[in-house]
Image: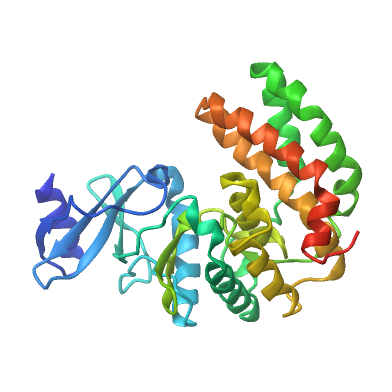
Length: 319
């Protein structure tokens, strides 16, 4: 195995010293067929990933975006390119990517939700991304994400394979159909990361390189302006509902509200967007057959629905 890795590294002009099995690779391991941290004789560390054939195009698109964001000064460390401009190396019937390794401070879960400074740091990151005014179509041909097409497909699957979950989710889908669906296609859109939450951020220390890197851009694309914000705040709340009103979440919303990050309609429908995005998480728990998280997610969805007016008031968003 190390011989293969050494040969792959040579294509990038690097010489393998050793595998760093003691170093953890952040992010979801499901994003590639395999990955490890390698160290070169020069002392540099990289993440070497083996990419499935079906993911090659998306990985190339993602790498081009990451390179653009890194060049613009955002904390994004994408794969290294070859002189040809490609970011993937075909070798031995496989495809590989090489990305500089970024060390992160440990994330204390769920305590991080109480850190207001993290919310301010995420707000600064999202503002920088927005100010670049990049067109998602420059990097991918995918159309704007339709959450209701996604939910409809999920409900069909649940009706067939998870009838109890389907029944439990019907009221929430009806609520969204009344409150958000008529407006979804009218919401302004922009380039979004698509999966912003605390674990997809490599954190530094407060007051010093607070965000060292943002990872797992697989779901990037054109999405409503508050898509990333709704996902981040929603993830704080499922750690502990108190996280919706203390620390990271309110600091994030407050910073973006004062910066004219989104239009009034997007903000008025903020809680509805949070609820809608929880269906993507529900799908994840169903795929993993995680009964505990399925039940927790359903309870959380209805907690958000039952408290949507008080949440709007807390965030000073109005009705």
